[in-house]
Length: 329
Image (cartoon, rainbow, N blue to C red):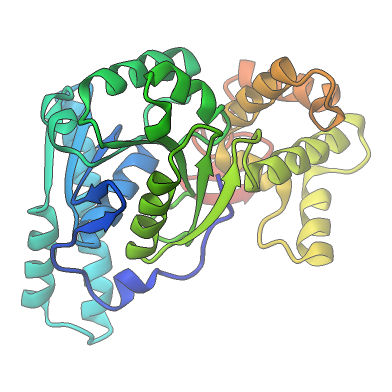
């Protein structure tokens, strides 16, 4: 989760990279595997391919695989078209660049090629620990002995997935922000067991993709969400108590704190179901942390989710939405 970015990355602005490989310690990253091609996964796969890495992507069905790869090609074509419109590149050259990048991406239903060949595997599957834990156990059994296993989780413990893998020295977090193509930040999350050389290797990888890495230990929510989610839930609690309306809370934080988007609109943008799932998880694991004990907000979120009012993704949350456009209350 993240605030909506305003600027395209320099990777996109200045053209795309030719083939790339990185070596750090015992880890040699040439091939990047991305599992899950939702909004985060297809962005990560696109970023790696644009930066010159061979990319293997995996989905659970052919339709999901086709949709994810199609989203990558659509995004690349759109960005290339913007460069053509600015006069930075001719159409033929832009088309050739898109074809070159797409040529670095191979897809499969299942994991056979990805686990056999990937030097870095980035997990971007559904945010459900009951699914992630057995998945990391499988990755630990089937990947190469020196493959780094990274999770893009925004809220779960990296250490739990590392323990499930049985190769905890190879596991870390790489938390990207949405949209991946635009947002500059990546949280690099280490556990007590992560090999420092693996952290150095993924940090070099992040820099090679023109992103900005920040190091963090395996604390709930890492850096950004540990601060952001409590802010959103406190804002929702104000609405639940009748302290202020959602628009007034958002305008207050925009004009009073300089936020580009207010916390309640941001919760809508992220997904009220996602916010609720994070809060339920944190409340369960950390019942004595007062930052997570906001019952008014949780109750209101539960009511909205039960009615299918999930925010942007459903067209209705605290605000009405048309795609990514907020239409107001």
